[in-house]
Image (tube, rainbow, N blue to C red; front, side):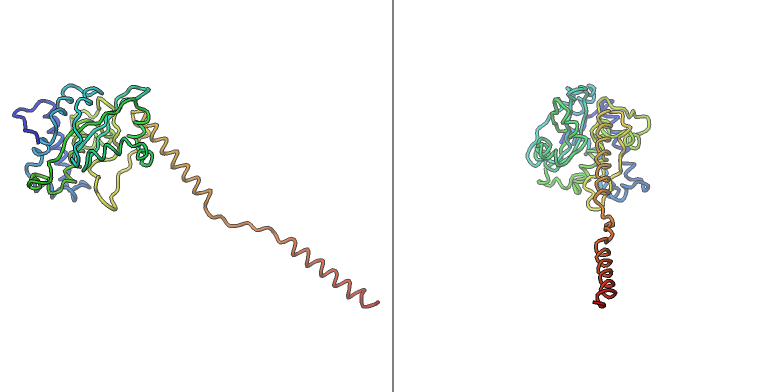
Length: 287
């Protein structure tokens, strides 16, 4: 846990404003997230301050300096065993040399990073993030914030009674601060007057508030075909082509009424037998 600074920098002030606006929207009865988050937020009056203390100081330094591959890489951090928190992967394109950022969460950061570096795991779980990794020349990971250990009474701290919701809120906050979400999501959640354009590209698609929603949870569909990033457009067209190929294959393999040939042979056989019988009756009896 970090100490709350006595005086906030302009970057921290904007981040604080973003967090307060996010909490306000989650409490709005018109929000689809109200039923899941509102009671939890209302139970913890110091939730915003606690979230602020979870953020590592290197994050504020990178934001203050200006976001680029080197400044984000310098955030770094240790992936201790069974540490819960929010992490990042900053990706440098091999051909276009553009910097893109992915932000995620995990209840075990070390295991999660190990999954990201396993090519078999990436093969079986395709995503825009992994599509970018295939075309990258560097992708260091780092830690944005961590939760206290669940031992030693930390479950009494603000928000720690439901750590899954706390992780969702922290990831959402960091995605908004780093502008690491699709443009339409940023426009929906960022306060009015706050610039939605980011200094680096985004590899996040789904809203973090939907994480850990359980069975029956629905993610809003995000159309990336008109995204500003050509890599995102390329990924969207690839997924669309795959879907169309699946639909075509399904039509080709669907059951079709069997077309049976006309029974010519039985008809001819019956005609021959009838002809022979008539011939026998007409000529055979006279012999």
